[in-house]
Length: 435
Image (tube, rainbow, N blue to C red):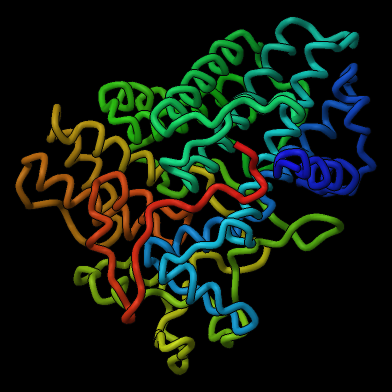
């Protein structure tokens, strides 16, 4: 049976029990999937949206950990499961184990939620206005595009299935470049819907989406995601335009953005990326030594790695600093934030308008304690500066380091920690996927 067919189990669970900070975190009894797909009602809409947003967070920790370990941002110590320091550092990957199958299934579970919602919206007999239908569809397809991009970042040149509307008749695997194109087109079509979506959404969303809580402001979030895709595609001019129509703000808070939210109440999820300082080898995230060693003098971003009371060793790997990006189990985790947008803007302009690129970099450098940029303005020099700042600004947030060295063709610069270790560029397609 295909992995995707099994995803419905996860999706059903999320419908039956979720608390995505909608209705004050109340745990609601959700509708059946058939009821939603056959005729979406107003009451079912809120719960279907909540289920999809909740599923976006499932196995987030596994995916971020796996990609961050691959990119040598940190080591994941777990004494009960040596695969974190074996498979993921030697590059001998299993296509039927947790770091491959769990993120893949979780992302497609959220996509399944959205597909059922969209099917129900197409079949609805409720009194939704045309504006409301457009707003719902634009919101849903933006979320769907984000989840597809998450799968693609994990799978890379393996490609992904874009057409998964019918679990009994899945579409083919689409190669990396064509997948990016399809995701970008989905985001573009979503903007068209959002533009016709009126002034308000006909549903509530979590506080992590506060800056994108209306169709108009959600377009800015959509444009930010689309700019990320365009950077990956190498379409720099398009990315620059999208960023200027996003929530990017040269004078704004670098942490302003759209976030996953977590809590310890009811059936909600705790932030899976938090571990307390000085955790034991049972569960710890240990900053790769090079993150500390390679930091420039006065770069305050190195403080995302905190010196332990004593060093820790596991599987012949010894570290001295804990990863500490999230301060508690209830801390929010960024989907995308202003600091990344400024870095994307610098990259988008590093060839055509180096002055604009340096202006964006200076906002980040000065905030990090480095002062204004004084290096050269050639494309190669600016790329080096961009890569450095992306490494420290986006540390431990979403596997960005691995994605970046892969797309810039410098995977060979990642450190090899032990004899027999190796670098890899993608996770395998799950064994249960029939191709």
